[in-house]
Length: 221
Image (tube, rainbow, N blue to C red):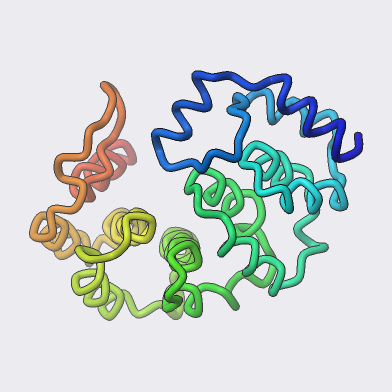
C-alpha cells in the first residue's frame, strides 16, 4: 500500500462515535476516528513498512500516526528522530502507543530518561516519567528512590496533567515494588490527593495511588 491508498483505507473506516470520543479526551481535529481494532488489522496486513510509517507520521493525522507506530521499525530510528517524534505528538493516547511500541523496548532508551524528565516540553517529560515508572518496576538499580519521592512531592501537584499522570505511575510503582517505601508513598499520596476523586467505571481500579497500590498488592498475595 502507498500513502494515498493507506489514508483512503483509514478514512473509509472512520467512525463518528470514535472521533467524538477522541476529541473529548484531547485529540486535535486532524483525525478520522478509526477503531483501534481496525488500525491493528491494517497493520497486521502491512506488517513492517518503515518508509510508509514515516510518511504516515508526517501527515500529523492521529489515526495515521497510530498505524505508523505499529508498522515502523524502531531500529531504523535515530535517538534524535525519536525525540522529535515524542515532542510532536500531543494526544496522550497516541503518545502512549509510541511509548509502549517504540520507546519502552528501544535498546538505548536510558539515554532519554533523565533528560526527558527534566525537559520543559510536556510530552518529553511525560515519556521520561514513563521510562522511570518502568525502571522502578523492572530494573530500579541506580535510582535514588528517596530523592525521587522528594521530587514527586514538590512537583506533582503543579505538574501539567500529561506529566502528572506518568509521575503518579512512578509513585505507584514505588509503592508496589518497594515495600520499604510503601507506607511513605501511601501517606504522601493521601497528603497530595492527586486523583482522589478521579471518576472510574465500575470494576476498574482508581488511579489514586493508595487505591491502585493496595489493589495490586492484595492481588499478588
